Image (tube, rainbow, N blue to C red):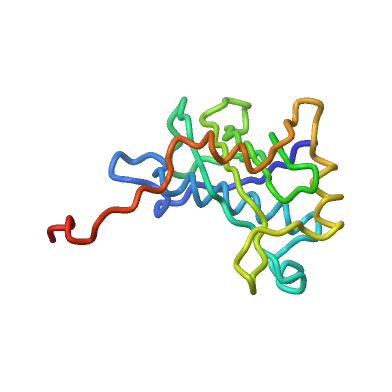
Length: 164
C-alpha cells in the first residue's frame, strides 16, 4: 500500500527562485510521515504514551520538475526498507502534481528511539503491524549494517583547529 498526503504550496514554502524551497521538501516529507502515522494510530499522542519517537538518520533527494506557489502537490509515503522488528525503516516519498507528474523523490532512513534512554529501540507490536501493511515484495530487510553504507560518518576534530 501507498499513503498519499496533499499540500497546497504556500508563498512561505518558496525560495528566492520562486519555487518550492529545499527546506520545504524536508518539511513536507516529515508532515506526510506524521499524517501516515496518525492515520495508522501512531500519532504524537500515542508515541508519547509508548515513550518512543521516530528519528531520521539519513535523507536524500532528487528533483525532476519545479513546484510553484499555489500548486497542489501530493506526497507519497512508501516503505522501501524495514528491519524484521521495524526498529529501522526507510521511507520513500514521491512528489506529484494532481495530473500525476513526478516532480521529486526523497528517501529517509530512520530508527525508533526510547525517549527516556535516548537509544534505538524496537517499537510496539501496533507499530510493527502498521508498518507491515505498507511493505511490498520490493521492501528490503534493513539492519544496523546498513548504517555503514551511509555516505557520511562522524570524524571529530581538535577544537583548537576551529578558527572563528
